[in-house]
Image 1: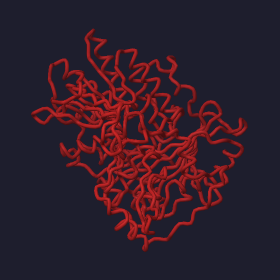
Image 2: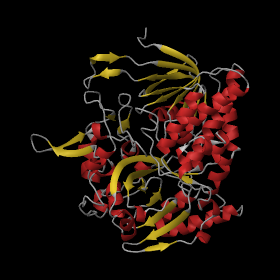
Image 3: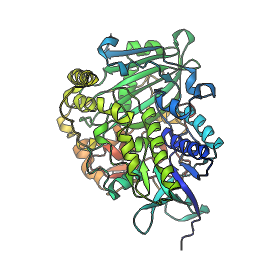
Image 4: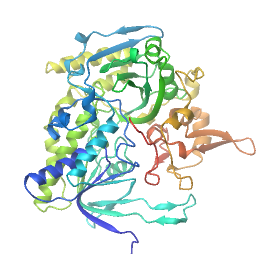
Length: 550
């Protein structure tokens, strides 16, 4: 008999990001409109709502307008800074070329959007949810999927607290809690660890392309007032990336701050490439440096984003639950936006689950959620840009951008390529280290560019020291015996937090070391490891970064 206590709900939501919060709010709104009750809870692995949220962010308010029409008048922090300027720069090593607006499709112009902290917006959404009666449990990580006897999802269990690294129970041990639900929504974000299991368990990816990802790294800077222009949005492509693709962003937000960052597609081939160091190098470009000079870096973080597009969206519903938000992958890559689509998916799933609960259908498959999403503006928007990412990935930054732009313009005119391009998983793309040129990165100057450890310090990352390592190796021999000689140990470069190192043991032989306490939960290792040998699972609840304003 299990020592875990259980709590019953109508709907349990795993993840307190934009999708999960929007689903919870919509469920309560529907019940209030009919003067009925529905029990809803959210599990959030971060120490508070927003603690693990990382995004640029420029937000299209279309979903927020639908969910809370008077959000601008209710103190939502995203309302502080409407976008006033939109620039797209193509960078060479020392120059920039501004792309005219007329060359980009209208939906990429950022008209009517807002820039600000997505973490703070989620904190505000959390307040709205709690006012409606949603129960939110921060610091509780969903560690296990529970199933009914018929194989449908029954709910989730949180991880045990107080387990030592050797697996023994410490004095403060507390067993996990089971949360049983009629329907469970998984809103874990990109590459969710439970979502991976569900995709395999219910064969959700049988009819879609593999999901692909980019690693996004972000910093917040306080800059001098005369260099700050609230609402100014800049996106860049080109330098410093060579045979990889991606780009930078720099958003002038409220309170004299700029949010800046760099995204590297994880389909890159050269194992010597370091996404973090490419980001630091990008900041040294004269046009970027001019904005930052005299300022101070105050925060850092990293997180992967979905880049596969419409063709990589899996089946969304399964018996007893659904995937919403970035667990499914609704990012519009050319627009560099996914908040609005994540929120809308949560709202559509909520409407489907509410109807099922009221009809007393338990653990049913929410087929109408899939249907309503396929007919929504999410599908219409993503279908317009479905070939953009694979074209750039196939033909490179210059020609790929030209081909992608042509395809998007044609789709704006209701024509376009007569087929949908496919993907290959990111972990299959690395070449052998002897096939690639080593990249010499400049040392950080401590003023504009920085090292990884000082950056992790600014992420406020903290994990209980004596706990099982949450970065699990399927085969402990692979890093040294295979990855080091073939790929020159790529994990020591693709991780943006310095988690992985190759050090010498007592005999002078190479040893693979995992500094799990540095992990910012970006999920890059789970994706890019060429043997898929690293499995990211949740650490003890509340562990990880604590982003104050990201």
